[in-house]
Image (spheres, one colour):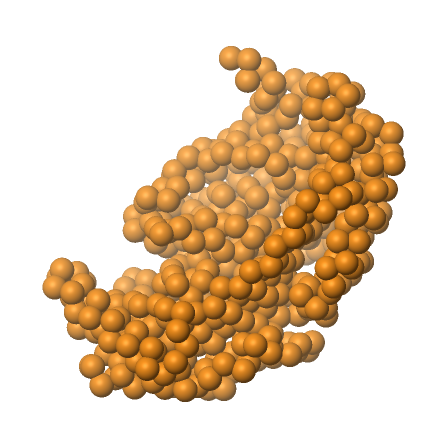
Length: 503
């Protein structure tokens, strides 16, 4: 599986003796009696550029390179990782992984079984990008964000600016005893620019461009028009500074995809990870109210609610060719007509709970970490032939249009939550009527999604996302996107955050 763009693999990664390392580790694991063994070799290059007030504040460029071996021996997992890329070191890692599994087997836990997966021999996949960010000079990278910052600083009411660009090239090799042999590479980037006003208190206005699975071309006009958005920020900031405070109470909301993606992430994405629903993942931000006994019966939301998990969507941050257990990327249902119908799975959970094949949700954030069940691109689907954002707004007599993400909180069951945003526009008789300040919306997950009266059409659909979804002990981070249309919610509880802060 190769994308149409098919950029060349990172040359330093491609030059590694990948097949030889895998053969050494897998052969030794087989000799020691492992029922399953897999090898991952990864080279992850990560850069961050920070610009403050049109001057470069910092620029970093780092590489994480290593190898890991995972085995099932006597019904138990074993894992070992290192940074020495020789065949002898790879064979030693296999010995260490088997030794760990031997100790674990004495604990008497339920034997590990993996769901079947077709063998993927000589598989190759690269994400869809045009310009590798690491092939752009430091001068050109910084110059673009200095230029945009200078434009902002020249505007009335903008006293400071902050710009940050985070970019990653992730190159992975996977092989296992069954015969799969997979090489893949993906690139992702997250640019953000913030305008700050300190003349009357403290107010900020940030770009709403999402992080994406693209290359440097994203910063120069492909997929997002930063020039136009930067030109709009000063007026948006000036209006925000003078905006009245919101009146708290039940309110109709039209929520833009640039805000709604985060609510999806926290209240649906994490809640439908099967390890959370089973209580396995309890230490890092809790379990889930969507327990497995509710599969097929839980009314998660209104009948217009249809949510999928997807590892294939173009430019998604969680889009891959194959997951870190060698499972081919796929799309699957999570919520259908408002009812919980599926979970995110890895191969072990799929086998343990009779879900059939894994839906490809295993990921490790470095060669030093074992793969765990991680979120795919979890997305709310638009309504075929559904309304535009403007048409949704036109149905609201007195409400708020919410744009852009900001702060949030949610309980450990993924049930009670509160979200704020970047921009809040009052809706009066179906029309936007200036900005509001101090807005947050609060609800339980099922009440909130149950209040969703309508979803926008495909033209309103957009991906949002984050680089840093956290989970596990030791902690891991994962990139993930969430697509959604604009959506209309009736009677959601709106808080005044300034008044709440006074209590």
